[in-house]
Image 1 (cartoon, rainbow, N blue to C red):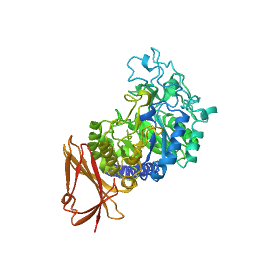
Image 2 (image 1 turned 30 degrees about the vertical axis):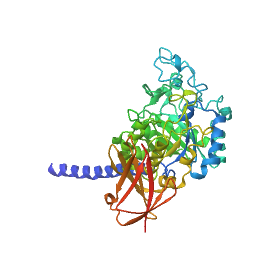
Image 3 (image 1 turned 90 degrees about the vertical axis):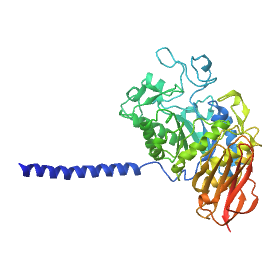
Image 4 (image 1 turned 60 degrees about the vertical axis):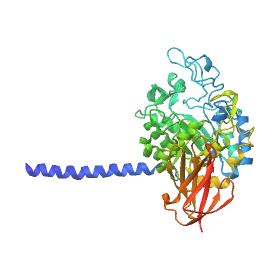
Length: 477
């Protein structure tokens, strides 16, 4: 009896170990079949339509913006042009003022019947896959989607992106449309109780249901056919964190046959999910929607500091778009139409912080008018080089009055130092170089002006205006 028990125990351990090892092998194999990290090796740079156009951009406006980018910005690295949300609605926001509880003027919620069925229709195919409105995007005729627009962007030497929402259209659920390539339908995979808290067009997808992954596979198959290079996937992290759908979207993208950058929105991303979100995306929003006010900018110092350990090639904490220039056309999406409320010193702080923290750089302004004032902030090759090519980016010190960040150039040995005045009055900010064991004499270059500032030893300092910044390159003698 003892021998029998021992024998059984032996084989149990043997086969249990074998099974466990097979599971490890499967897990390891799964983890290696992930996103293409040969793209987004540097923080993506580009333009997104939301801050200026909300959900209403049309083909002519988009192409004109692409033309401007190709002419004025592409040579500096601004290569992505992204159409933001609700491109599948002919007239988004038309009825929002009549919807009780509408979040804001022009918000693109659809009207619902008392039983929750949609009163308004969206543009989609027979498989519940959303398609661009042909009224706003005429080249999408005959269900060709964004293929023609993507080809136009590519012809300019640029890359094309779109915004998508988590889930499956509410309309597809109530019409019980089939999932392409399966015997399942929208009702088999949708979660009608899981609706985005700020946009009611879609229901969540239950990852445990057969057909769920196939649905996401089918929409990314479509995006690959169109020639999409960048996906901004929204309602992924604000709360709750939709772990299962993030994994399904990431897997669908990784296997769609076309390299695409995966950007997760909106934030603030939970720091507790840092390892997960960095594994399943190329960039992810660490900030809530960021607009042109000082308190939001000041808050991003803490966010970028917290997320700085997760900065690495192909994995980018994203502090959100750059709200500079002409914003909120026709008083949508956020406040009145205006030029950015950031002061000139705050512009320097914004671009310096985003650059030394290596956040993706995505413009949000209308680029068709009033761009002269913002161009110097977008075309400084020295500043953009820090964003694209530096390493060891981190905060050295911060209190209520000032902050100091540092980064390195591993090839040349140069250091980059950013000094920020966070107070409401002019202030001298001093960086004690001993804090970073920077001993000896350093030649200093002002990255914003290009001027040689001479030699420094022991300390680096600058007198900065209210909410202003200085950005320096330090090289050894």
